[in-house]
Image 1 (tube, rainbow over the protein chains, first blue to last red):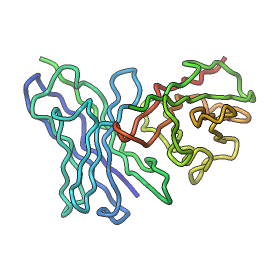
Image 2: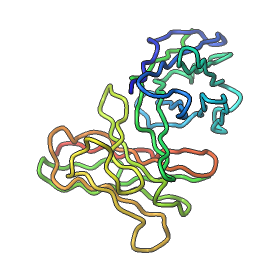
Image 3: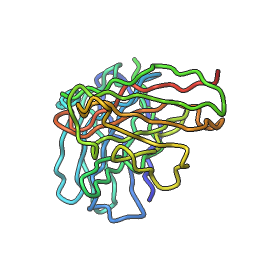
Image 4: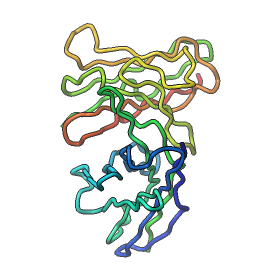
Length: 120
Length: 114
């Protein structure tokens, strides 16, 4: 199992941006993929999650309306998109696969992280 | 909203010591819904423990998880490292599954070399 994320990005406030997470080594449509933010020197924040099988998506209230999570099953890739960046979006973003065997819910595989820097 | 509070914020210990990290939930959660991760600088988090006490594949048996605590409230969980190795010094996060936000993390405990 591998989750490979796109490279570091630099954007300006108000610009749009999309980063990606390509999955391999397992049946892509059978596992949820989440996005997690880590601001500089801070902890982990769950942003939202998508089920590639049917594109069902749930967002954390803290991020709902500011980011969009999408998927392209044909290339086993999940995306995190901003329509209008803010300086406070500067962070490392991780994608992570959710495993849920017998009622447990945890993130067993993680991407390497994508650094997003927003600066005018 | 379920909030996870980890303590202490920083734990200073020496190799060979026993480390005990705490994670308290603001509401009762099922033991199935609590996991622990380790994160080293510049790396992605790594799953250590799931379902409160199950070690992830490849995790050494010096790592163990327990809970809920003796107050039977279903809110106190513990990660123990029985004898610290140099590579264990890192930041540790607990994570829960529940009501919105569906998933949340504690603020982390930094385990540093004394």
